[in-house]
Every structure is written in C-alpha cells, then in structure tokens.
Image (cartoon, rainbow, N blue to C red; front, side):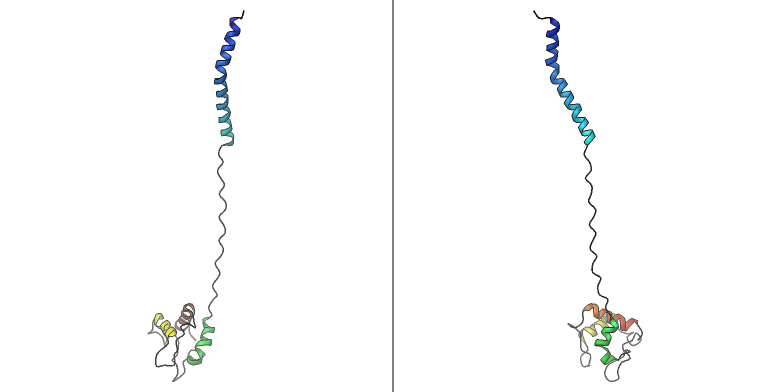
Length: 136
C-alpha cells in the first residue's frame, strides 16, 4: 500500500515541474538579455575626403608677355598706331566684361585679334584683372 505522503509529493512534482521549468527559463533569459544586451553598433569613422587638386595659378603677367606685349608693349604702355595702352587709367571707362569680351572676340577693323579658342575663360579673367587692377 502506498502512503498518502508519497502520492502527494509525486502529484506536486509533476504538476509544478512545468511551472518551475518555465520560471527558470524566463529568469535565465532575462539574465542573458541584461548581461549581453544589445550593444550599439560603433559608427565607422567618416572617410577622409580626398583634397581637390589645387588649380594651377595662372600667371597673368606671363600670359600678357606671351600674347599681348607684342602689340601693347612690354609695360602695357601701348604702341602708337598699333594698339592702345592697357593700364587701369586707360581702361577706366570699360567694364571687366567689356575688356574680357574684347580679349575673347577681338575688335573689328583693328589689329586686335580675338583669343577665343586660344585662351581659357580663366586665363582671360586673369588678364582682365592684370590690366585693370595693377599698374605696369
């Protein structure tokens, strides 16, 4: 004959076993989550931008000597009967755009040929700044 005590123990053992097991899983899962919680993903450092190539400085004085001095004189004083002086004083009435257009397109019925296709817009701008802003 079986004693009532052992039947009670075995009844509670099998009834409580799934509850105890689930509780242990829950506690263990919470423990693991709290210990290894989601770590923030480190942000990789931003790539160092490649520096843009430095544009070559335009030597306007050299451009003038090569392209303009033959007609306008080495010191931009002009040559009588051929080409006018190119100084800030002699060009006060002309805008930068007008001077640039003259260099680009030339002047009809004069010896001034245009430099379109031979000089870049940057080179023409450099010449305009030289002859309108600097003394010879």
